Length: 337
Ligand code: SAM
Ligand code: SF4
Ligand code: SF4
Image (tube, rainbow, N blue to C red; front, top):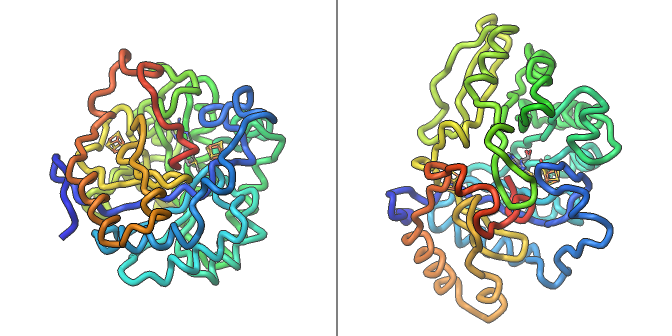
């Protein structure tokens, strides 16, 4: 039986951030003016090794974790990431192994990731307009890089893929319909994410958020959609399908219709901290246990104790007063999306 937290939620999913570095500077995640040339990312010795990650993953799976998502930072910047994928994919009991990427390095690694046992991949794509894409990515890269990566993923056998789009009012809300049209008629699932007040450095304000209902109604006006039942209990994205049979989209309503009651996710930061909420101010250090000769049993007990005490439900209690700078918070790129 997986441990249940104080709100009765089991531990089912683990997101692992394998690097705090990124080749993009999306202003809502790693604004270039803060993460410039001189910014000091974690030194190598502070980052969990593949062996350490795999050992922890095994312990988490024994505690009930069924799904693992590899993220970052940009996970494909981690050298030999396919070696980690190969190790994780062999762990008994793991039902789903996925990865989220900005796509820049994907095409070169696609076949190797598939061969290593990666099952699914999610791409992030915030705009199709080349100038806007550059601004949203904070780098001089064309959106075609991501579209080509999606195409390569199809050829390697990853289809259908998911595509994540964060919508920020006044920046890329004009891309909602063009993006819907781009993937309409394919098996790929475009998922619009409400812009969140993660971290402390993106200057988030409530009026930057385009509510999911508005996103869906904008799509509906161009390409009519209807709601679909969740794939499984606890699915956080709300699903809609095109009434003409052109596939489906999802919306992640983290701000306007929070789903903390269904949140079964733990996160492992690049430097080995167990984090129980995207909005946590800190995590619990597991790396010192790994490097201090703790047994699997001791580490497992520590994780269970943290989970049993978990009472996080930030998105259900969010107000203007709690955001964005009211308290210290872990940044998104340290723990993944
Ligand atoms: N670098 C990879 C990527 O961008 O796909 C993986 C890590 S990134 C932190 C994971 C996801 O978090 C991305 O889809 C990104 O758009 C999303 N994200 C980052 N900051 C966000 C924010 N403030 N609100 C909502 N989603 C955010
Ligand atoms: Fe990098 Fe992903 Fe954050 Fe963009 S959202 S800066 S690609 S980690
Ligand atoms: Fe889970 Fe925290 Fe997000 Fe709520 S705010 S859904 S507890 S990560």
